[in-house]
Image 1 (spheres, one colour):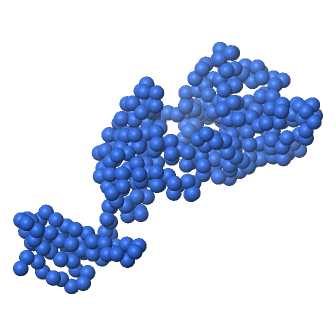
Image 2: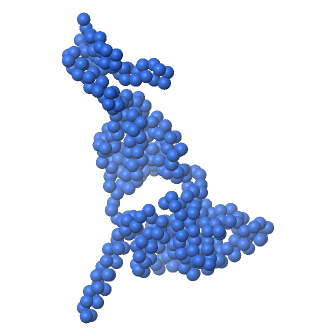
Amino acid sequence: MTGKRRGHGEGSVFRRGDKWCGVLQVGVDADGKRIREWLSGFDTKREATAALAALRAQVARGEFVRETELSVEAFLHQWLQTMKRTVKATTWSTYEGDMVRHVIPRIGSVPLSKVTGTMLDRLFEDLLISGRRDGKGGLSPKTVRGVATTLGKALDDAARTRLIARSPRIECTPPRPHRRSRAAELSWGRDELAVFLASWEGTQLYAYYRLAATTGMRRGEILGLRWDDIDEDAGAVALVREVVVAGKSILTTSPKSGRGRRIKLDTATLEALQRHRAMNQANADRIGMPLPDDVFVHPDGTCFKPHWVSKRFRDRRRELGLPDSFRLHDSRHLSATLAMQAGTPLKVVSERLGHSSIMVTADVYSHVTEDMQGDAAERLAALLDAS
């Protein structure tokens, strides 16, 4: 007799050729059809029986996973569709870009159940060396770590939904970003910013760039402003929406932090907004339409687009011969840096920037706080020496 009949749910062990095998019912499908897990290739009946017992124990504990035959590409497309229903459009656009541009072309054909930590490490190394789409070098450690984070979330979800036994992300080591951020390496200072702003005086873009320089607001936060958001009596602006780019679409959404905030304006910036409103009203009267609700619009009433204000920034920067490495977003960093150097408390700077916590601000602008600590030490020493 080559096999032994066992009780219901215990499975069976049998001989096939010169090897021993086992089979166990591990569940039923949506149609009520039994799902069996097969074990094979054992040299002895004892080995097959032990493997069957281990499998039976896994099933009893609810730990058994019948790993999917999906490829990484097929799984990621399914995962992206699920994520589209659960995250903001901008977040989903980042997920899609990470997976479609960087992951699927490299390991998309690999079965999901065969992905290992070593394979992920090789993927990250390849992205660091040759990850750019134009083929002219690799991605930054920060960008690769972002890809690793997105892929890791997808693999964790695969394990959570029992498509794979465990997530291989725990076995890999994504690159660490360089410690110093762009905020510590700004190529503009107060003088360059003043020259840039002066060049826009009297135009419809002056108020936009002045807001960016004096408040540290993000590009899309400024574009999302409506006149109802500006309280001239209190000298403040309320940030309740943001205009963002998601793939090929431009959307209006909640601020990046997920909650709005209120920012006080200096007198000169408030006056710039008042002049800007007068220009908008004159344009509206000229074409016979009411004043648009949005603050930053063209003479015909259509809203400024994110890419357009960035391009105008780059064009003017080059016309003025200012350092070319300074981006529009860097005006946010410069605004915060100048505010801190002027003695503004870190918590106030954090609130104006809309950071999730003061620790984020302290980390991004650690180079400034280090300099400020040196100044504080010198001032304290001067007081002690004077006595």
